[in-house]
Image (cartoon, rainbow, N blue to C red; front, top):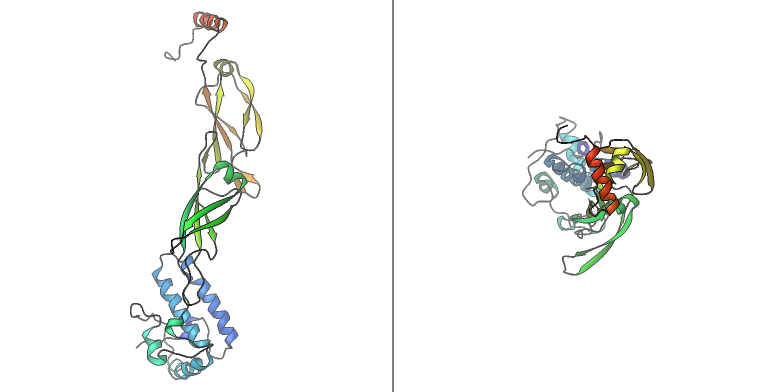
Length: 296
C-alpha cells in the first residue's frame, strides 16, 4: 500500500497548520487542477480526486489527528515522493484512505462516501444570431427541454462584439448536482449568420458595391452603407468589377473601441431595360469605342 502524503498534495510542508490554512491550500490546489482548466488531462482528474480526499481528512480534526500519527512516523522518517495510487473503479476514495479510515459516518463536519458533493454535468447548446445582433448586442430567449421533459426558457444576454463560435456560460443552469453539489453550467455556442447585406470574416465585414458601367468607367463619389453609418468613398476611373475597396475600421467590433475593416466588392450592373435614348447612346458608344475586353 502506497502511503499518501496529504500535506504534500496540498502543497503544505508541515502538519503544524490550522484548519483555515488547510482550507486556503485546498482552494489553491483545486483551482490549479480543476478539470475545466485541464480538459482532457487524465492526470489532472486524478490529482483533483487526491486533493479532495486530502482536504476531507485534514479539514476534520478527528481524522487529522489519526492521520498525523501515521504522518509523523512514516513521512518524517523517510519522506516519500508523492505517487498516484490506483483506485478501484467507481470508488470515491483511494485504497489508502479506505484502509486507514474506512467509511466515516458522523454528522455535521464529518462525512460518508454517499455524502460526497458532486457538481452536475454541464449542458451545451447553440444559438443563431445575425451580424447586427452580434455587433450591437441582443437579449435572446432560448427554450430547452429538461430531463423531466418540461420546457425551460432562459434569457441570454448576447454581448456586443461577440465572436462567431464564442460560448456564453450561464452559471448553475446545467444538470443538478448530487449530494448538495453545485449545479452544472449551461454553455451556449453563438453562431453568427451572414445577411443579405454583410458577410463576416474574422473582424472584417464584406459587402457589395453596385455601380453602373458609366460610374465605373468615369469614376464617381458615392455613399456605401456600413453596419452603423454611411460612408462616402471615391471610385477611381476605370474601376473593374470584382475589385475591392477597403474602408478602415468600419467593420466588426474587436474590443477596446477597435474595429475591423469594411470591404466593398465592386459589381458593375448593366440595366436590363433601356430607354430609347439610352439605347441610342449605347449604340453610338459601340460604334466609336475601340475597347474590346476579349482582346485585352
